[in-house]
Image (cartoon, rainbow, N blue to C red; front, side, top):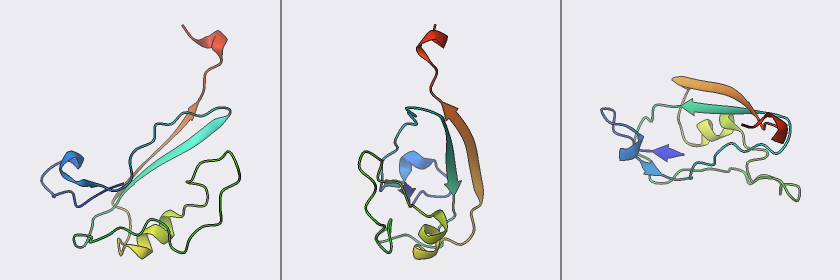
Length: 97
């Protein structure tokens, strides 16, 4: 999550709050969504989880239970201005070159 990106620049000028995790699915097809919001003002602190989610099951990532809608409400972001959605799947060893 990158915040406070000046409107005439790119994400490298913003403040990284949560680092990017590359999509590396172990099995099956995974959905990835990037959502872009326009901030109404600079954030003093981004609320990533509110209220705290239930603990994730053992062996799963910390993103389980994350709600984009709640995140946007907690950080006064309004509606998204853009979004990108894609699927990814791990190739089997026999399909690699």
